[in-house]
Amino acid sequence: MEIAASSSQYVILASTSPRRRELLASLHIPFAVIPSEADETTPEQWEPEQIVMELALRKAKAVQATLEPAAREAVIIGSDTIVVLDGQVLGKPKNEAEAASMLRSLQGRSHDVYTAVACIDVITGRTEVEYRRTTVTMRTVAEDEIAAYARTGEGLDKAGAYAIQGLGSIFVTGIEGCYFNVVGLPLSLLSEVLGHFGIHVLR
Image 1 (cartoon, rainbow, N blue to C red):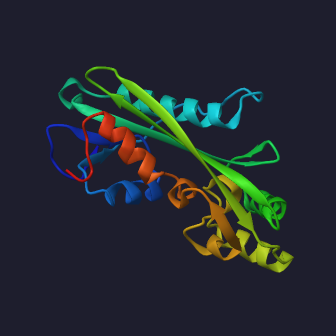
Image 2 (spheres, rainbow, N blue to C red; image 1 turned 135 degrees about the vertical axis):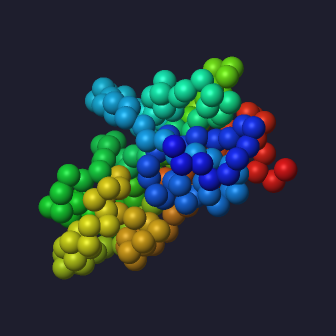
């Protein structure tokens, strides 16, 4: 467990995502990082918001179950992100070819990005789960650009096969909603939920 600062009540991020870690660090609150090994399979008929809320909560609960008694004064954050196009959920591509295929389907159109945040107070067991949706519009992309971007590997560990905070930004012509939701951790939502647990970013 890697602790960024000491505190009587710290936050545990149930994720190894470097993007989520960087975003959480920007709030300047004490936190630790513990990987979550939660099962991420869901029924095909589930709605997007149901998927992300359930998976975010699973991740937080999986980490909660691993904590030693001495580390139990904490609030655990679980988060999950999916990309949805025409009702179809696009997860992380398995390889370069699948990444290119996803990018082809997204180019010249708008899609939705859902991210959920789940928080658990380890001592009381109190749980809160919320989500946000952001609409992203991409320009029409030439085939050689799609192939070149897929070869960079940047999108291989990201839902929808692109990183809006990286080279993938050159494809995006507009967003409606929270930018950080697309990156993977909606900070406005997170700070609001943490406030309900007595953790206030600006106090």
